[in-house]
Length: 341
Image 1 (tube, helix red, strand yellow):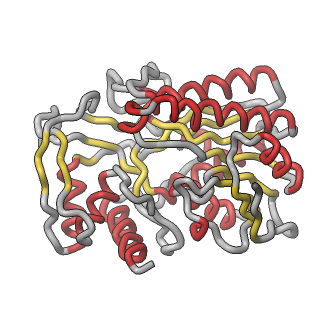
Image 2 (tube, rainbow, N blue to C red):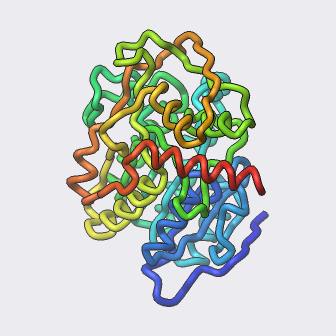
């Protein structure tokens, strides 16, 4: 069943852009970035993990699944969609190991349906929410785009399969794409309009700010014997609003050069250890978090840092929030707001 609320802005707009999964964490920030840049987003989301309140009232909202080709095709036509930003899918790595078929259905098969709907409807541009998990455990860090893609879990494999589909479709049709490979996304909209709201989220900064506010008793530190300065794993954390801005730049690049597609890393090119992140949360909250030291998880590399030179060079991307304390402050601010809802 299709349920729509709001009206897409039809005047003085750069065009209507379909955002799949636009009621979720990253998708909702992309909606805000598109609006701020003068586009008119149209959101489709099945609300399995997203939240209706995360979509502003002045944005057209379609409740439904991207695997429903009739619904998607109708939405593309009814709203004269110019391009697609595709965020819909499942994202929990341990769950993908326990239930791989869910991930191949929600990520790979559903993406195939969406891409077919797009091609049949004459959509020429698609930005895909991919992941650094497609690299698996890389041989080197920082990780460049030409590093081998050897995913070690169904989540990473499901995303890589979609990248491969997009590459084949771009070779066969008048269609280009940008696959953005995210590193560790964190933080929240600086103006408090959206943030990470999923119950039971597994991302370190989200878990840590929950602990700082008392909704968790402690934070697990998985491994203290990594080959890093303090023995804990080092990761590249990217502010969600900088990531959303990268999607707008990717959209404009695809429109400007329809013959060129892109596969690019999204990270800052520097990393922080688990203990450094927890220290930052302690500083922001003025309260020490209880830390439980545990064993390593299978497949965790010592460090996972992006080489972001390509996206900076091609799109002129200039991050605004490349600061751990700022990322944590925004996440904590959102968590406090979420607790009041």
